[in-house]
Length: 255
Image 1 (cartoon, rainbow, N blue to C red):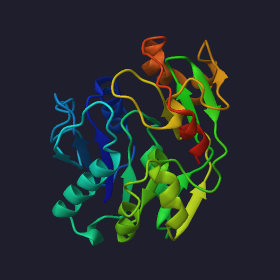
Image 2: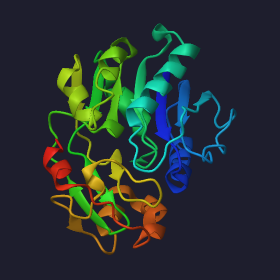
Image 3: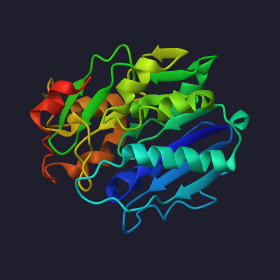
Image 4: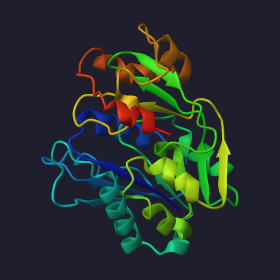
């Protein structure tokens, strides 16, 4: 069995796409999906038990609810892991995936990740692609020693290592520094980090219009080449939302 943890809240567009992408996953073994919704009103009610055969849905609602300006990612990840371990024993879980609510996952994502798993303790894909559908810009990052959080899975035996970095703004970089049993791979198009969608803003520097290295893609040709017709999921957001501009020091500190 594998476990997915998705922190969300006040992100209607993001979670609507996320549940669609999870519904299409080709992985055939048992999945438990832990959805952590800290927003009011709740935006995750459409996913219930019976969402998919062989999928168990767990929901948890941390308090106090998120309010504008807060970063509750670490708290929500811990709440999701706690809910998971209240329902299952460590030896029942093969891997824990962080599935972020605003990112794109190909239907084969979970299946391919588990193909690479082997005997590692932490798994991730390198050279992360960022795409901002609001301004239609993209970047291909040079992260070759760690994976972005949304492309990371880890063994339950090292859950405490993961939780030890929950207070860092960039959990992924810190976790990959200390994690043991690491395996990285590159398959080019299994997932895409989607940035800048309307609603509750993302915390990473990649959400900014001036994120370093971003290239224009006005006709979405780059995204179409990467994910095919699924690019249509993001057509509606062009020029729809204000740009989230992090402070300059956040850009400089991004690993």
